[in-house]
Length: 419
Ligand SMILES: *Cc1c(COP(=O)(O)O)cnc(C)c1O
Image 1 (cartoon, rainbow, N blue to C red):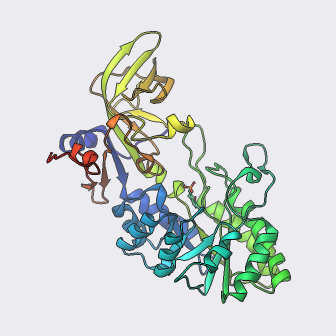
Image 2 (image 1 turned 30 degrees about the vertical axis):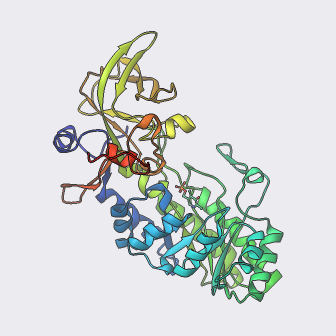
Image 3 (image 1 turned 45 degrees about the vertical axis):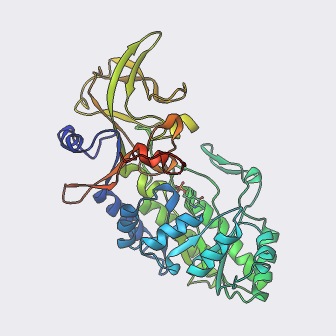
């Protein structure tokens, strides 16, 4: 059972002020999540979460996370710029990009962000880059190749992933960078996405800790940090069990003691770049039912569409949906819930059971706080929605206004709109 963080009464108040559709975020939940994460890794002195900006690039959200002690993980020029404008300094920025343009490396370098190199070949690229000063600390992204399998459920294919470098490249890269003046090294790896298990981080950590020992043997360098990156998932489906960050922290701690502490390494910092785990459950997409339609199936047409939440159309991802105020009613009907795009994949649910839905009902689409608004686009000249924060004091605040037609025309010549 998934329960929205707002009631129907609250939603009626909010929608009286702001038209649907909009993304709504729960400040209390976000702060609690950050605190739980920090508690789970309190055993590691240098622990830091660098929130993956791409998941929710919204200043008000980034500021809350900053207040809770998080940094940011950026992958583009504008993500760096946004983070700088939100008050993050270079020491709080990880730059985990790939296929990176020269000016983005230069900007990250200028800001003092920690650059996480995706490719061995980038070392040569940086050597030839005017104004690039090799910093004291750099990170390298590892790709072990082959297949990453954990039990039966979690599987990914690093072999065909464009990210990271081989072990031989990583070790050679450290040696090369040392000659270029780099003193401290980190290692990063991201092997599986949206893992709904408490074992992913511990298993990844174990691999990386063992590699850290090998690196020490080969190069004489003891790594300064290991970045476990993103990949801790959320229970999008109501029958899935949520990950337990306390258990995940314990699992990583155990691996740390058995592999690192046992081999005389005690000051290695653990970093994370979580996006989905931090934010997804603390966002809802709120949408209103516009039309009912019955042909070969029963359709419920809502005022949000895939432009507001791309995951169902793009990945066939499941997002749970609650009909506000009908939480306790029996699911007697079967509906497809659709948006208005001229694309048949614009469906938030397919042949799913719901209580009877009426025109005007408010639907809560769950777990949209990460990779939700941020994956939005403007197909069919649909405009981006507003984002609203439900504050800890129960009041709401508009943290991003909805786009207007004038925003759509702003990049075009010859259109004058002031609406
Ligand atoms: C997307 C991404 C993340 C965040 O992933 P989640 O699945 O949201 O946890 C972290 N690091 C890098 C390099 C990424 O590309």
